[in-house]
Length: 125
Image 1 (cartoon, helix red, strand yellow):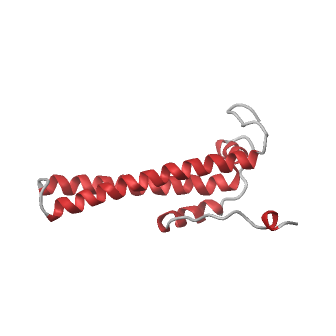
Image 2: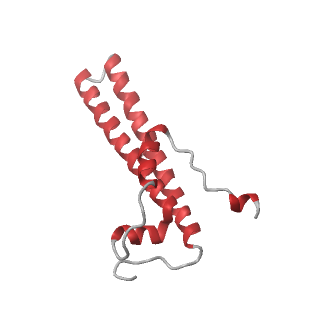
Image 3: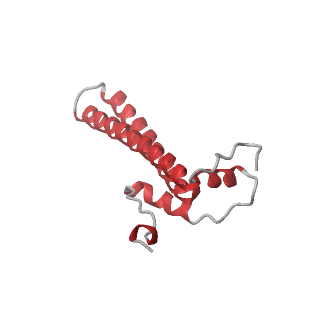
C-alpha cells in the first residue's frame, strides 16, 4: 500500500471550527432514505466535517459583524470604539471568506468521495 493510500485525510481547521468539526465526525451512519443519509451519500464523512466548519465560520461571521455594527452605531463612527467596530467587521468578512473556501473544499471532498458515482437527488435512493 502506498503512503497516500494508507494515510487518512487531513484537515487544518481553525480553532473555532474544530469543536463543531469533531462533533460532526462523531455522527454514526444515518438510516437510509433521509436527508442526512443523502448528504453522506453525496459528500461522505469529509463533507460532514467541512459542513460543520462552514457553519462555524458563518456563525462567527454573523456574531462578529453584528457586534461590529453595534459598536459603530454606539460610537457615532469615530474614536476607539469605532476602530474596534471596523476591526470586527473586517474579521467578520474574513471569516465569511474562510467559510466560502471551506465550501469549495467540501465540494471537492464530495467529488472525491463519489468517485464517478451519480449525485443522489431527493426522492431517489
